[in-house]
Image (cartoon, rainbow, N blue to C red):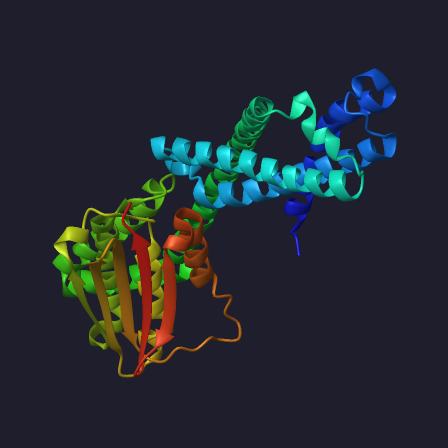
Length: 357
């Protein structure tokens, strides 16, 4: 069945074409002198109703093909050609349907075939009529284009606002995950233990921790960053986590050089790696392995994070990180991006596919 917006469109078309057809037919009913074909009032009313129905039908067909074949977000000269073809096709469709209707009703309902011999039905007037209808549908196309463009601008503005709000929420959640008292206490406590044992290593860890906090704060207002910046963030997180997990955490990465400068949403890989440590390696007594791999696949960037363990969803888990990733990808890239989380042979594998824009 028709959706709500489709029903609204049909209602608007009925109203518009009722007014338009009324301008043509109602004066003929009120002022007999204008009825030069000699139609009776009930015949004019029947033609009036048919005109409304036919014009509404042609508008629905026109909208159907317009929505599927005219691309306003990538408007080129070819789109103008397609619009002109739609206008011409709509005029021909209307004319053919109207001629078929006139032939049937005039011959078999009105029983007035002499109408076809009236001077107004000449070939010249028929051609003028087709061009007049073409101009009418041209105005329809212009009005509908203005409407769809305005609606698209409004939707894009709302999407941008959603992206900004979601980005701030996600960055806030990531920031909380990095600087909450538990994380800070463990990190600082572990670094403190290194100070006497390995002062150089402790200084390195303090630097990495400060870099993580700086990254979270400075990337608060951006929607995309270069992949190599995100990789640096991930490496800092891994090294700090290794202070506590020691040999239980093993990390490898395979980063294609061609992907380093590609733009991605900030903290999206860091969230995957953090989940892999928190819900995977940290729960394994013997520890495990995390691998990060990025590569180009056709016109897409593939990001894959795999960790030892099994895919489980804890009862108190809100899956906020996973939902956050899915929502941000959808808002920024629409259906062109994808996120998949699965378990294969005792490994949890998360994969993100992002289009290269």
